[in-house]
Image 1 (tube, rainbow, N blue to C red):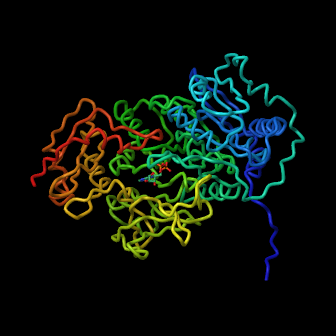
Image 2 (spheres, helix red, strand yellow):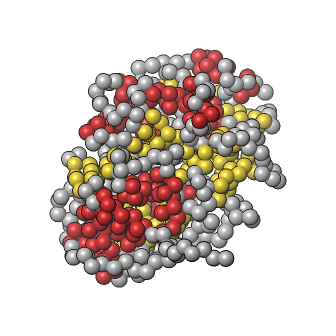
Image 3 (tube, rainbow, N blue to C red):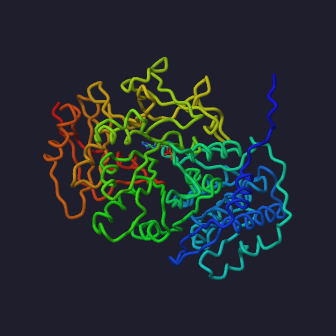
Length: 540
Ligand code: ADP
């Protein structure tokens, strides 16, 4: 028997319509390049996104064509988030932290037809331009300075009355966006999001136990809009009518804290590096900023050091830890407590909050052993696999890769994890970052977290170095906090509480900064390169 329910395709356009109809006066605040503030609202977002859609159709864009953006986080980028899909086209966000050759590779692979670029990024775009075949380059005058004559001016391009604009008929499975993986493990690969997956993901992240996003919120997206849809929050925020605050290109701790205070931010998202710099700024001047009590800070992209989660509590700020991947739109899990956890000692509650967390509704996870799925016992460790309506089932332009997908249709995440009986997932490493010493696995992440809980340590990354007898041994590369000092011996003693002797590194290096990927993760490939001739001090 079939249901009596209507068949309504889920589209991003419905989010845009709702934003205008119900939340038209909610504000979008963006920092301009000169740090002044640009203010607009959802009614204007609606009008201008539809103008952009109409202009793209007039420029010859057809359903499914790719329109790329090379832009910082601001209201114009949000217009592209809605305007490009409203034309039936595909928003292709380009990571502006990549090298020009990589950006060109990605534009060519995706066959982008039009590029929308911030005026401040013209110098970068000009390095890319000779290597690509773009039909049009449209420059957004974010500084207010005139756009060079050789390019289209975004304001002129969209200037029209789009009051009667009609969206093209859309299949909910049609593509609305695409993003390339950051390529830490080979050439970047394209992940293509559908209207349906984007709407479902927005509903998922907004749920009370997830981000608890509502019309009462003012959301600061520090996570780049050019990578993994800024964790889908721009769409979710318009859906629920939350105000949005964008930092533009100004990601320094002081600028972010000023924005949080002045705009009454209640929820912010960023990678651990951002929150570590914010924590240092707060520790240096604890009374300078009056932040909203209980402000939620979503952290993901790499593991949130547990010590950071507790440190923020002093300031009445609450860290929410989550795990995701470009391939998962990107949010897969978030860590929240259940009623039965509330009676546990505070330390135990912190331990649970520091896990990668529970899968969002509709996301399924399993941990695979050699042959079969392992029990959810909090101990069995294997490869984490995922499936769900916002998990990619393949890559654009690539044949199905058995290294990335199982025959029964699960995504192989490349992460190594365990899951507790109640469903809390814990990542212990990435497959390729595990250290195999004397036939036993050592988790680099566990050692890093323990080193980072030492008060003198700002950051630590642990990699494997070759050893003639033990095969591999851990090397800890440590960044010491400014004005503090610590010795190898003190750090070894600090680890003795948590680890067996053979797991504790004998190899220590004090470095100025941990090398990072374009999205702020530890770049362990570079660290391994830097230490490739290191001779392990562990006796044979
Ligand atoms: P790439 O895989 O190219 O680095 P992504 O930005 O999609 O690009 O990164 C996804 C990966 O980031 C995950 O597979 C995982 O290894 C890591 N990651 C994301 N969030 C977390 C987290 N909270 N804890 C640990 N690792 C994380």
